[in-house]
Image (cartoon, rainbow, N blue to C red; front, side, top):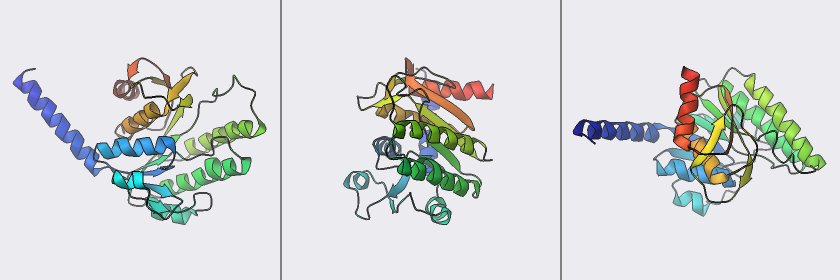
Length: 242
């Protein structure tokens, strides 16, 4: 590497660090498995992170990572209450969900609560909303229960409603989630095959999307694959800018 390359790399790193330290991210679902992983990744880059938790007691893991939190119940939080939560934040990540639980919980979280969050974002121009959703084909190799069928139907309706709002949104649909160690590589694009992907890799894709504002008003699907995550996100951004 030449001295010029070294200077350029140093300047790039400084600029990236500056952007990270000035970015504020609020996560709904921050105590979930993907939410925690995302929060840890963002904090490691100096990002200011907060999120909604049910308990008023400090979360030891989040607290140790320097993550603040707001106490509340997403199922019943009003649009006004949600607006107050996110008013000072740049990027809102919605990683909450029922995970195909009881239909009433799916309705309350994956549909109604997301709509209230979306409405709050719409009322405050300049904010970005990233939704962690699900691949429509996920679990289709199984015989689904009524609750699971309901979950997929609600997720689809929620996506449609979000895409019709005049806001800066991104929807990420992961394949079947696993708790295996992250690979650091994925297949990412407007349509991907369904297989499985680690939660750590999904968190890494969400992290990269936070720092890629060129990707806006797009639905992306992510699956296990061969491409390094930063490169995969960069390729998508370049494709939409072409």
